[in-house]
Length: 90
Image (cartoon, rainbow, N blue to C red; front, side, top):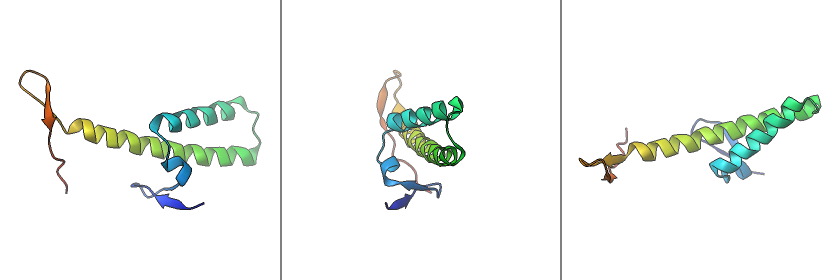
């Protein structure tokens, strides 16, 4: 399976990169539930923890992208959304 670098330099598997925020959060919650149960062996726990860290990174990137979009919304004098400003680069 090919990996691709995310903005923060962590390698994420293609299946995680293809996930929506909600799918990644559900996967992360499932991992937490299983780890908290104490019914997972050591090697499986390590694998699950690694995947959980990847899912967390993906969720953070999705949230950052959403925040960037929200930050670009221009509010008009009447308090309504009047459009978006171009994102300044650099």
